[in-house]
Amino acid sequence: MTVQKALSLTMPDIPTLLSAYMPFLDRGGIFVPTKALYRLGQQVYLLLTLPGESERLSISGHVVWVSPEGVSGQRMPGIGVHFSQQDYSVRDRIETLLAGQLDKAPPSFTL
Image (spheres, rainbow, N blue to C red):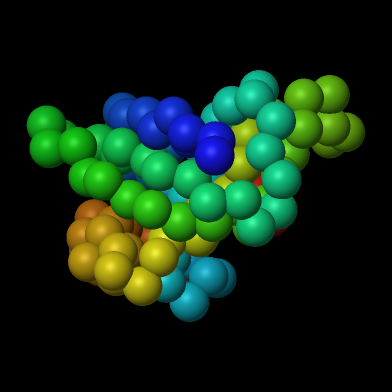
């Protein structure tokens, strides 16, 4: 059995959160910069700190996006994590922070 180490991500500000958030996923998701290798469908655990908050949110999810190191287009290496069903509240908190900005978002780390 493989033990998965939790990833940790702190969003320093709203523009960074806006670039990392993946609203096109039904339960929401987030891009996590990492050079570590992950595969699509792999389960991951994430400790996420939102801008202006000190609480670390514990999220479980699955890898739905992989940008390996050296990917074209000068994209940052990392993974997109689709939140699990029990993490709808995290999606709601993020979307509250990003209210009115999702439809005007600049290019994201994924699409």
